[in-house]
Image: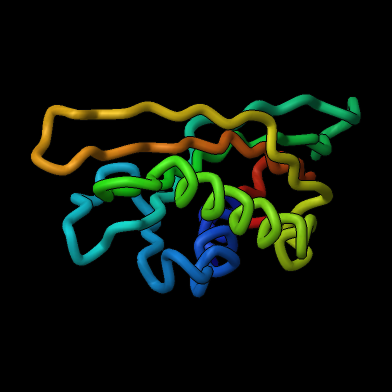
Length: 145
């Protein structure tokens, strides 16, 4: 069985696949090379995880929080802000449909949204990034959950 963090990330990808504007252009990677065929598209990756011990005696219980990044890439001539906002709304709606990530976690929360713009290419590219926190419990020494 794979690490619970991997399974949660895969659940995020599955939850975001099939959205109206991005379809199957959802990738479990922070370095996927986005091309015209995969835009607009989404990349999902975990950027950090923190643990807090909630019991004293081994094996101890851990309360863990994963920080996941959901990056939305849009390249258009115009209306890219509107398309980015619509995709971000679709992402949030999809995430809040199952806060437990199919029973793997206790909670999912969208914590922030940021966007950047690049006009260095022939067609402008806008990137929106949602930061999501997923809380789950584990027992020390059992990373597969």
